[in-house]
Length: 144
Image 1 (cartoon, rainbow, N blue to C red):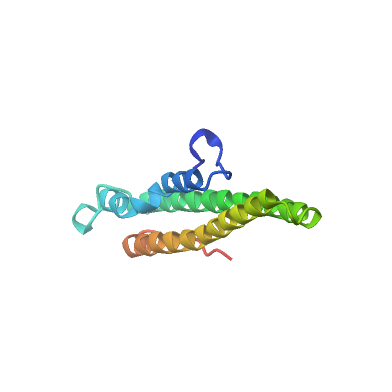
Image 2: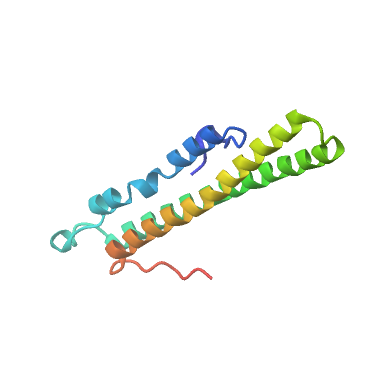
């Protein structure tokens, strides 16, 4: 699942968060997806629950990996900007605009790093719900 428009904007943190919100749609709707696709015992003969759970699991993993990759690439990009601004500040320690920009970028970097923690919570919640509903139909492969 790619970011809308194919590009994640790391410059503007509010846009970065907005794109992540859209990318987290599958996790936000996991309960609904499970309720509508995984049959209860009385309807178990009409739907292949194993295949349905497997496809849902693969979609979840793809979404988790793409978000993780997007967040980490923005962290890398912002870290590089912070590094360059630190070098610039070392050369010209009295330049207030460099100092101000450095603080702004450092704050953005910290916020992006905190998104990794949010991502972990979202992923754990989705997998917990998935396991509760699909454990008898599909067992995901162990990830080492």
